Each structure stands twice: as structure tokens, then as C-alpha cells.
Length: 136
Image 1 (cartoon, rainbow, N blue to C red):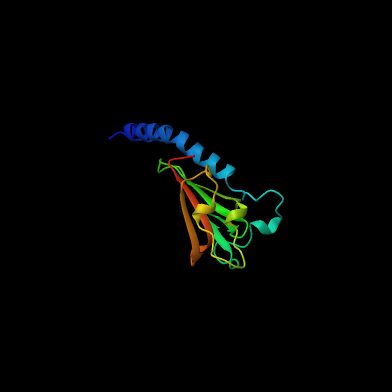
Image 2: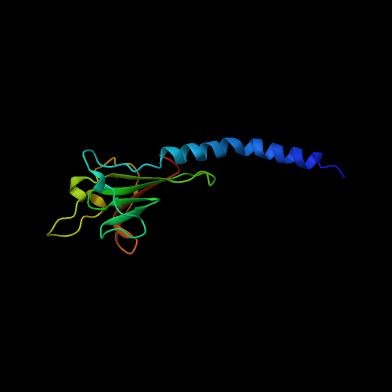
């Protein structure tokens, strides 16, 4: 029994998936740093996704500050590619006020990227999460 056919098949499979693996490594390297609102200090993205302050909003491996930023999730339509997470600046109209009702997803200006919006105020965090499916 020869092992050449098995090794050749393994080599063909490795060559087929190599471009996808390279894309995953590139995406992970590019999306690992949190995005902070312009002019914001280090506290704009603080804590950890596992247990920060009351306004900590888990966002993939990041933790956004729900008072100043929202979590943007870009889900790809290719299962082998990871989702991309970023903390984006929260529009002024979406910031919580001391009085009055809590802002809703309608506070985002028309044309804000990612159509699906969810307001979180509980165990999953506090703030907004916007999601795109199928890329940007």
C-alpha cells in the first residue's frame, strides 16, 4: 500500500485552504486594536469584556465604553472568515442623558454603516451594537 496518494491529497487540500488562512491572519492582525473616538483618552475603551464597569459593552475581544462608543460588528458571509469588531464613536444624539427617556436606535444618523441595531441594557452590556451581515 502506497502513501503517496494520501500525501498528495493532503498537499492539494493545504494549497486550497492556504489563501483563506492567510486572509484570516491578515484580518486578525488588522482588527486587533480598538478604535477610539477622536480625541478620546485611554478610558474611551476600558475594562475587559468579562467584567468592566457598568457601561462596559463587550465587542468581540474588545470592551467599548457604552457612554462614548458603540460596538460595530461586521459578519462575513464566508464561515471560514472571522467577524470584525470595532468600537466606533457614538453620535451625540445617542448619548445617555441624566433625564428623559433612553435613546433608541433611531438616534443614529441616516447612512450610518450597518443596518441592524440593538440597544443593550443588561447582562450583555450597556449601549448600542450595530451589525452588518455579508461584509461592509
